Length: 347
Ligand SMILES: O=c1ccc(O)c[nH]1
Image 1: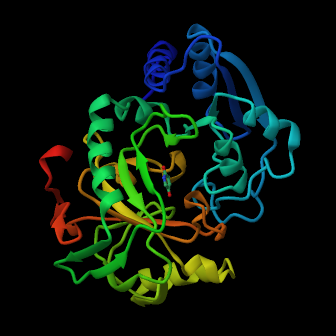
Image 2: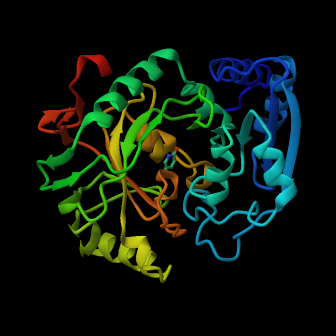
């Protein structure tokens, strides 16, 4: 349903205030042809009202002829910013970059963040942005979870459907997503609330079972039958099942890129206003489905790129696969049990 400009301006002001936007700060607003016009226009007004010094960067679209869908998260890391020095320099000299285009997993995003600029991705439908607007309580949950993740050495995941997965962690930084960005050099995504990290290279072992009802992104589909994923030495070795497995294999094979089969971030969802069910109620192309990535108690795992963690794998093939009813533990301590978040400090 539609959202009024006024409501979205107020939401932007709340999120930018949480992101510590102060008068006089340099703000770059990155826009492309498929940015949401209402998001862009209300962001401009909100930044202005909060005293930000605004630069709007409009970049031409890219990848439309090589990506296999219009989902921005389905073809990542290779953006129109590549080789565009004026735009890159403008963002490197900004205090805050608002990204409505999706730079996620691009080397340019890391180059910008290294300057101390903070970056907020914002590209969901306005009604989703409002429903999942971040709060300090989201940040509290995400921070408590991130602190545990940062101290842990092993991450294990099981499920009644047969998942039995483990990996060593600590080599890569923790990804904490709280929906606003309040630290220099930080990145976040409004709307989201989850934590993750990348497994130590070569350490992932076991089986992940995508059960009926689990979600496959960017397919925006609920699996209708189980898929068995065999993982060895950090790589997806086998994808077995019926049609769903064949479809997933065929999609990943089409990128012709061995890095597509690398395990990527693993973690769990902490957003209390995100729902497993929402995916079934939206047009598939309406957004990225941050409900699916963030719903409370999910086990979110992914495949492909790790540039965001400082790695070198920049394959454009990125699957995000949030699962229900899983039990994730850190050094043997349960964070979720059958899809329920356990630690009180993440309640
Ligand atoms: O917000 C996001 C979206 C996709 C992803 O892989 C990570 N975080």
